[in-house]
Amino acid sequence: MKKIITILSITCISLSGFGATGFLSPDERNGKPGDDKKGTKTAAKREDTTCFVLSQPEPSPEMEETPDTCLITFPSHDLYTSWDVNSAHPYNFNESFKEDSVVITLVQPGDSAFVLPFKGNLTSLFGWRRYRPHYGTDIQLRTGEKVVSAFDGMVRLAKYYYGYGNCVIIRHSNGLETVYAHLSKILVESGQKVNAGSLIGLGGNTGHSYGSHLHFEMRYLGQALDTQDFIDYEKGTLKTNTFVLRKSDVDNKYNLRALHNRHKQDVGMGRYSKSSKAVNGTYVVRNGDNLWLIAKRNKTTVKNLCAKNRIKPNVKLRLGQKLKI
Ligand SMILES: [Zn+2]
Image (cartoon, rainbow, N blue to C red; front, side):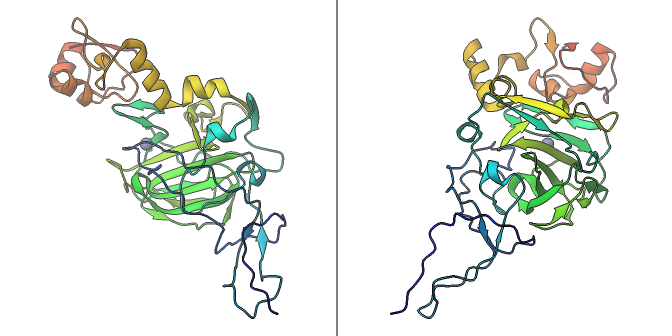
């Protein structure tokens, strides 16, 4: 009697090359993680598959025991145990990160040296921005300018993705993933190996973006980190090559949504933060502010703000800077 084989789980590991065309990848896209507007939701914990099937023929009565499969592994495979080419952030950091801390070596021996994805002015930083979290660092560029990979790695996701627009996500062997969003053109595909400095796309203004820029993120197990903790954007170099990620840092620094909720509770604020308004005619600049927002919130104009504070409309605001309203 002939057997019909149904593949439920696979538990072997082997490496035979790259260029995957199909994966065991349950579609667990709950929420729109790429959309800054809505913020990131984490997906349900995924099945613990430890390898991936490149070609999986339909079960047929003629098939015998061993299906025709070709197995490959991916960077940081032990850490993630999944490789999803469709969902930007299907990981749950809190469930996956069981240690108190982890040491991350940014550039390991044999790796290419770090390369800044694009050298330009920073226009928005990691942090709470108005009514939503901003998980990346925005770098100003002109549409069509070249964007490169920051580190060696393998492209996991390369497609149009909600608020990210045209987006490339690269997995690195140290467990980090880097995100390059709002591209005008994607020049790589899932499964492609890249080196630091490899051209991955052209800068643009796609997705939830006002004006051409690169939205650049660094994540670990789905948790966004502040890229400025790693990168000196002025010099275009790494600040350190070894980074200790502590769970307490995530709780106190990187988990923006939780921090925001905690802050609101601490000060008994509702949805609209009081600190977005001037107190006694003085406004304190917060992360994500610009003159237009400050003027709007405080029912004045940029022109008035500039006149009262003797500043120009294109002034770079400092966090904590006091402005007369
Ligand atoms: Zn951004």
